[in-house]
Length: 118
Image 1: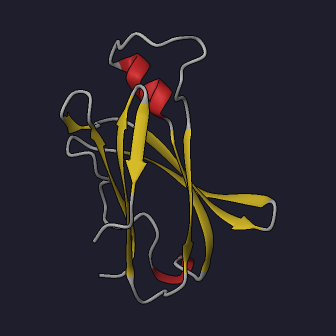
Image 2 (image 1 turned 90 degrees about the vertical axis):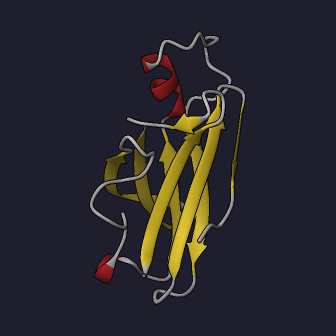
């Protein structure tokens, strides 16, 4: 499989983060070009396969922006104002357009982690 995928897990609740909105951007210097917005499903993944694939899956720098604050508010989790974590940007590079890039996010109201998954 080639392309870009993601998976979001809510570590505070111990389950997939359903309904979390994510914006995908391509970076060109200081300019961000929005490619698309997606929302996670019941499994914390995005329906329809990779979120970036084919001709749009190119060498370059990208950013996934996870709207964690809105997700947590929707669940009724009490947050400070402003919340400690509201939007979580993850910048990464794609150097091989024939490879699969998986960017998972583990999130809770006070922390997150990511890595290049498989």
